[in-house]
Length: 528
Length: 99
Image 1 (cartoon, rainbow over the protein chains, first blue to last red):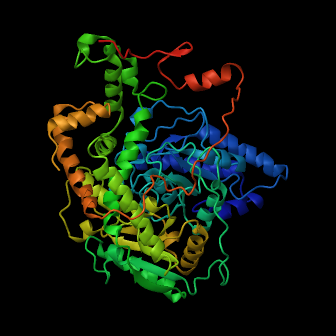
Image 2 (image 1 turned 180 degrees about the vertical axis):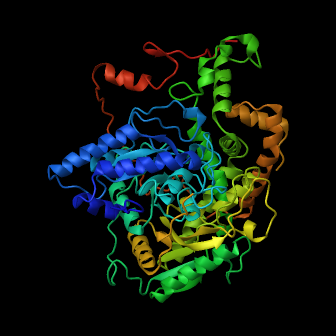
Image 3 (image 1 turned 45 degrees about the vertical axis):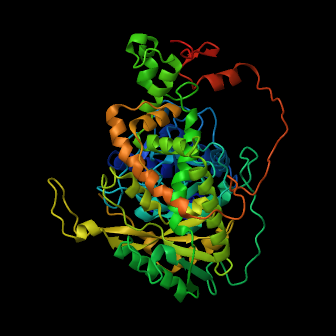
């Protein structure tokens, strides 16, 4: 039986009908990971022993006729910011290079109860900060569609794993687009849930009022299946909420979008789709995608989110502020820490300290943190420290919260007129590794369409909606030494749908309708 | 906004980061650029309502303060084992007053 490009649905059927065993399936994925991971660097840890043990357990369950759930025996990969008991969890950072958590995250507990199979922990930007996975302390991840390009970030490893068929689904986290943007760059589905709908207990915190765990998958159905398992109120996460019961909408089955009102924010795309900064190929594919939904019966109109142009600036005040607070716990004492500093005795020797009058403990903190954190973490910690410091708090942090509230009101007003908001997930296709490494602000601008969702706590999903050529290949720029161009490489484009709070069901319905009418999500990267 | 070396060192000190002179020169234009960009929020009028720092619709989520007893060595092991600075039942850290 062909075990390539399986969805969760097909795996579940296959296990029930004994087309393959959980162990056979797991071995197949592990084999693929061993072959492709050296070049993609999507996985930081491959948990072969644990995976085969879980799969064996599932097979024995099936043999005994015990009923299996949709995720039982389905292999998955988990972003390394989600803690897994006894399995090294690094958050992509040298600061946690030796950290083995003493407990599981709530989402992991839930998946364990379903009988999941953990293939490994995936690479990510350090502490989930970044838009390209180039900020990882353990090397960048390559985009399976073109390995000279980034997979997006911060959940680049999970996105690449699903795109390269190394896992049928993967968990990630999304604070400013870190699931949706890499999903868009890698041609897979990426779901960021309503804030509060998935427990953050066991998610290594980056920005606590924006972080959420979410899913990468090939199909919307699969994302829905996983969401239904990982969601739910958790008393250990004081911000988690049980979704209020939604009004049941009229209309046909799960694929009906007749009468659906879609709004396109003019501040994002321009009142006539004439905004600068969006690549032509991206514009075309997203317009075509919206046209598909129109053909299926949806109504489309331009809407206004007046404070959307300030969303990115607001984000880059609030997030670094929360980051500076959340990363203050990393001192190499209770957990983690940089190995070489732990083993060196220099800090006890006054003569070796930069400032011999400084306390040894402060020196310890400074050395651990300076060696353990990468440049982006340091930048954000410093921006946040500055924004929260005396004399600047009102101008930055407090002000940003006013803008955040105004943005929420913009969306609430828009949702009086429309049911769902649509736009490109990212203004560009995947860029070359290194292209934005020296310009942090240019990197931040990649999040321009995604951050408002996190600031307002709304759910968002990115759907593969076609391919566009990379503009740097189009300009016919000369080949660099050693570079081979795969003429006119086509890269994935993502359509983003944003829903009202807790309106994931509508996002799923719209996504399923779209995927029934198109086949972009079925395309796979060329074998390397 | 411009930041001089002293101001950046002050921020670094607050954040318990140590920056070399080379790093300082590398980060300075980047931090200035970012602060300039985010400074645009100054142009936005305050909202009429008072914002809160949390998105959650919950307020004051509490639970009773219960003592749960995890027997024997397991709990201690669980919480001390991730530390590289463990010294028996303690964590031995560099002195804060040591000069």
